[in-house]
Image (cartoon, rainbow, N blue to C red; front, side):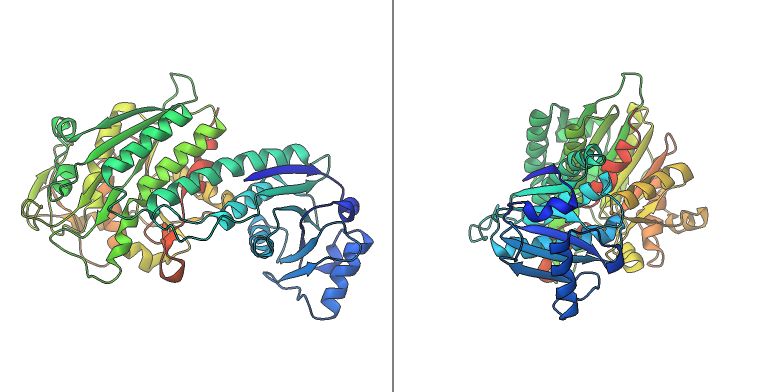
Length: 486
């Protein structure tokens, strides 16, 4: 994927000898800033009903008169916002991709100039348009011809556009890595394979890495994590990645990703329908790998640690049973009331482990609860934190990255639901408010630092005909880390 800034005035666009010229138009025709030949083509298309000035409408014109470009694509944005612009670019790139063009010049007809955020959005839209999963599908269609994109900009905005392209490329690479890992079937993406992917990432990006095996995990006393892993023949792995871009004295940010590479539910087994999608239950782990990839490419002055506890949750004669009591690394005991609430069990030990880093803040990311999907659907990730400043930072990062989250309550009253007669806590409460009680469970392990939890059960993947990983929330997390750079 080759994306560059092209310093050219809009009046010179007709002379660009590109395979395709893409012009994003605002829905308000009075705001267009176009040379006469392009203005005439666009107004004529509207006048004859070929193009409707509504968000998402796209018109493809082959061999347009008066242009050196072989193809012209007009795409309508609702307004000048980054979100509307990205949607219009995505629609236009779909048309260009279908045409077989190898490259395109992308221009904005106004009002106002392109900014870094628009450039980033264009790059990530292109990456999304080009992504096709191939690892276990030899019959996948060949790669699209569209590999080169030039973003038209004026001299004053060129530096900003170049900065946005750089950030967009890094985030796109991180999202692609997260999608590629999460899309692999459970018999391919095992905990061992996930650890190997982390090692490859570390070698390629100059990161430090530790991978702890079962013996080392046992030595640390991670009884909750091991309880989940004990039903599977696949050995658990505990992955720790370090990006050191800040000063040694700077406290690191820590990302903790849930890495259940396949979740049957254990003894509390899930229904058969759609259980195949439980290969995506390591979406939190995938997002940590993707974010580490993006941050390493951008090289901000910040210290970042990625932690991934990973195992399978399987039923067997060795599996943890409902009613079993396990001891977490913190020393707190847990009555396992439902073995399908396993993500919080592996995360709680990881959250205790990261105390040793004396972190500036910790964010855990997990496909944790169906209850969060019921509450928020598939558009927003659920955000839980008792720290207002940390929550505000994550929300702002999500808005800037077009990867939004919604803050959920975290009140002490919900903690009552976790009481147990036989342990310090149960691992589930009643069905009502399930996403909140899951977050309250995790909160019990985070008193030593500032903490937030992202429940991405509704946003990490899509079902149905479009089934596959989304790579979220890599954009949110990357923007969040960059906001802390010195």
